[in-house]
Image (cartoon, rainbow, N blue to C red):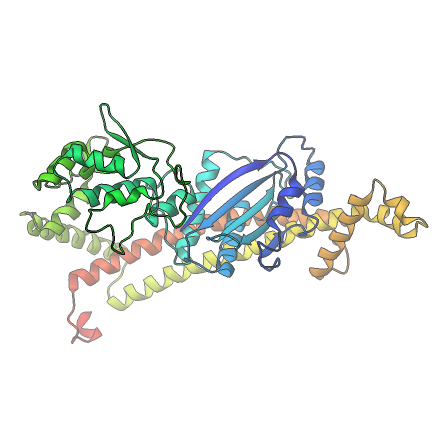
Length: 480
């Protein structure tokens, strides 16, 4: 499970990059990587790209934070997930610096990327749509790595700290629920429960709804226990090791309505629980725009065994599916089971081949984008670097030109690492890049079509297997 948040960097870009590159936080910078720029020259290269684009906006870059649940992944895997996320959301068009911090209780990635693309000089637009794309992409990558994923519509708007606190039973609501649950068997009525909550350090606010706020001292949790338990070794979430006067340092700022803790914590429900007559209300079927959600309804009835017409519905459904399957097999001239197996293998292979072709195109596009950038920088700044190299007073020459010299040396280093010994023709590179981009678009169309066919044939094969339902002792010929 990973939680993401992003914000713009409007000033002190270098300070932000220096912060995320802190060796104490990144295991001596072992958990730091970059794309399209050097770790130590990122701020200069960001600025060079923005200047080339003529960008005069207030945003120098964007800072994305990706946090992981405690103990769910390793630093190395977290960094790999961050790299995959950066590749997917930035498409190899924006310089970025990525680090994984290990100095907190939970692992988290910091991704700082340029506000402008070095490929087409287009500005990165951050809005709700782009942020939801980041979240969906992060969830897909986490799921692929076997990490848990926050389901849509749940935990919305919670920070990582709030989510972790609730998961570990340390949130204010979790503590209040635990306090109420603990007191219900001990009290005789609702008023006594409120009195005991007050003695335990809760401030009570009466009105249409009863609300509570924890403001107690470190010792006030003892009021939750009966006299016979106070000397035992039992503990409670409110208990703290430090003893001091005044309010606890975890005092709650806002009131919490009891009814927001759940149906079993509304005033009437608590009174029934105290009297021992409470019965949990049966959940109503979920609705969508006033209509019963069919799948949820069917699942509930199947699980409960309450559907009298389920068997008849199943028979009719199987007959319909059988008819559709026969029509499909006839239209596609599939006569034998082996033919169906071969067709499924063919469409699956086509799907995998299309996916690999897209990956190859993306890899080549990334290489071309970097080659175009570094070649252009090298070619543009080479005359200046020649002057610097021949200068008798290099320190004086560097005044006001240091950034350009650093950029040239960074480009030269990058080209050397890419194995470039002779500067390529930039125009030809751009032509190849444009053609490959168009090819990638066509490949996506083929990929989607192959995926659709694979899913369709997969359904047909499952229908055939389900309808025939061959016994384990039959041979393949018998199945045909």
